[in-house]
Amino acid sequence: MGTKNKDLDHIFINKSLFFPKHGILVIGDLHIGYEEALRQSGILVPESQISEVMEELKDIISRIKKQKQALKKIIFLGDIKHFFPFEKHEKKYFNALLEFLKQYLPENRIIFIKGNHDTMDYSFEKKLLRDYYIENCIAFIHGHKSFPEIFAKNIKTIVMGHIHPSIILSDSQSIKRERYKCFLTGEYKHKEIIILPSFLSMVEGTPINNYPEDYENNFSIIPRKELISFKVQVIGDSAVYDFGKIKFRKSFLIV
Image 1 (cartoon, helix red, strand yellow):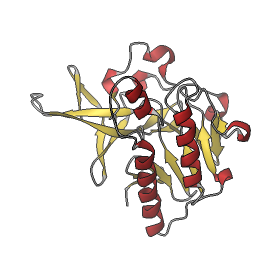
Image 2 (cartoon, one colour; image 1 turned 90 degrees about the vertical axis):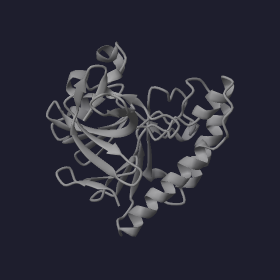
Image 3 (cartoon, rainbow, N blue to C red; image 1 turned 180 degrees about the vertical axis):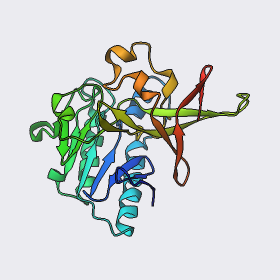
Image 4 (cartoon, rainbow, N blue to C red; image 1 turned 135 degrees about the vertical axis):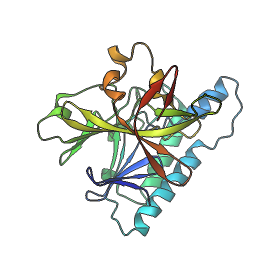
């Protein structure tokens, strides 16, 4: 089904995270409308992003059900959309996604966290977007902005997206190098941290040793110096693999 962490009682399923005890499925940054942004910049790509997202979600939900696990809630960790201003294609895609999800859960059990790209709430009067979500001892947040509530004493685990983690795997001579999406897990301010990769298939993400120079100032709630001690779970074709802690060599990353 996926890779399970016994300590945190969660399972990695493809690019998603599942908490069996709570029945919570967590999805990272979707960036719906990314392919439309490419088309507007002159790069011709087919209109397939939203259908691919639905197919992947359908497969993940099917795998959960086959294991006789209950799906009670789906949480999206922000950057649901890609364009910063209003974009009609994104509104259409968002509504299509919401209708698709309602086949599996009622609308009030579909949680959308607000990311830095989510300047428009396409649910409009429903106001589905929220700054963070807390259930039991788990806080869910996008990751670009902190809130005192997520670091409260009763919070044990913080789940976030935003930084689109990936790694570059290389041999010792850097002859062959490949980039993979990955999960990051570690500890910060006495909280267990789980960082999800983006759900966007078109882009692998940013290697963890290559984040922007202004990272420490405004990029993420987790400092870079803490991130480089996190553990890496690499997403392969058929499973998620535990690669242990991050190590650096010159300008590329190996584990």
